[in-house]
Every structure is written in C-alpha cells, then in structure tokens.
Length: 121
Ligand SMILES: [Zn+2]
Image 1 (spheres, rainbow, N blue to C red):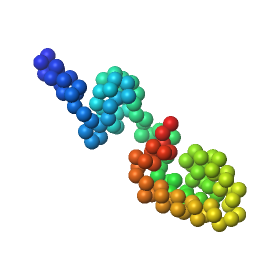
Image 2: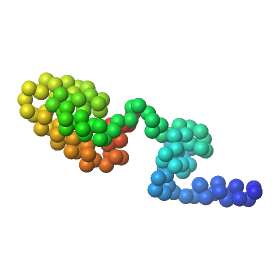
Image 3: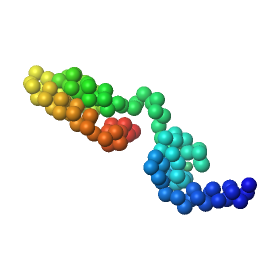
C-alpha cells in the first residue's frame, strides 16, 4: 500500500497537464479544470458553475441582436459606461448596426475567450 501511494505522488509531480487539466494556483499540482477546490491543498481554484456572475455568450448575443440599440448587452456584460453611450446614441442607427455585429462576434467567439473577457473577476 505504501509503495503504491509513493508511486502515485511521483506520477502527479512529474506529469504535465493534459486536456481538461490545469495547475493548482496555490500548490502547483495538476488538478481537473472543473475542480472548484484543489484536492491536494484545499485552496479554491475555480468558480462554481452555478455562480450568478457567470455571463452567457448566447444571452449576450441575443441581447445584442434584439435589444442592442439600447446597449442592453453592454449592461449585461458589466460595461455600464458603454451601455450609457449606446442609449445616448440610440436615436442614430449606429448602435443598432454595431450591436448586431457584436452579437455575431459573441456567437463566433470561443467560449474560453469570452470567459476571459467577460467572466474573469
Ligand atoms: Zn493545490
């Protein structure tokens, strides 16, 4: 039993993260990317999927395409200043055009990139 445990530890320390794995921010050991708490040191790494702050790419895109004239998607993404700008210019056609383009950008954006931009805090 003891020998096996030693081997397992060695394996963990020599391995590099595979797909779906990452290094723990605290102890540097390899953990599953989905892990909210590191099983090795118990430090919180990820964020819970149910976190209400998590912004959805699809919701942002739909808001941009259908309510983009008023900058609703900007408020949704936490860019309050930009949202106000959209409202100020809502009497022009510019926000409508820009927001539809933004909606398409959100949809074609990779989830990782979207998270990096709008879900990192
Ligand atoms: Zn750790």
